[in-house]
Length: 216
Ligand SMILES: [Zn+2]
Image 1 (cartoon, rainbow, N blue to C red):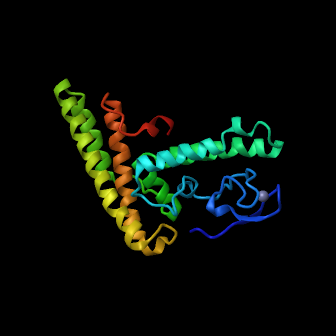
Image 2: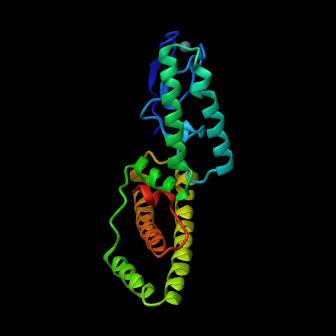
Image 3: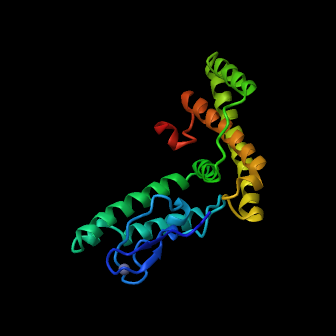
């Protein structure tokens, strides 16, 4: 997973490991550019990709890092460093957007492991169509379908957490899909179902379970 990516600082020439997603050169403290293949998790200060995180601590780490590279602090620096400040800010914001919601974090971990999310099973697709028809039959039915959808979404995400907690703790990471392919494919199926449930609940005027739905 975290194979090192040695680059040279453009200010002082010292080598640094871009896979560790540093904001500044470890030698001269000049801003360095973000590397596109650095992990979003590492960008936010975690040692490696993981599902179970302290979301408050991660948010604090993201904010602290965005302050270090804030373009306002780079106004007196070189053209290159001013550009790196903007690029690092964008990379940090992308990383935070991808990991802050458990659903999106799980999806990113599957991508990291090279496990694609499968299409929704046919039987579930039929069940969703029936639930939608049921919801449209009366306001009381709609409220019941929404409440059931929210509860099922939460139960699915609890299963996702249980599976990924094992990959986090027992397997020790997401860079080796062959070790956990069955477990991760199962998570992919849970995410496909959770995404469809979230869309159904959203379409029926229920709570927004996935903020990212609007951009998909
Ligand atoms: Zn340097």
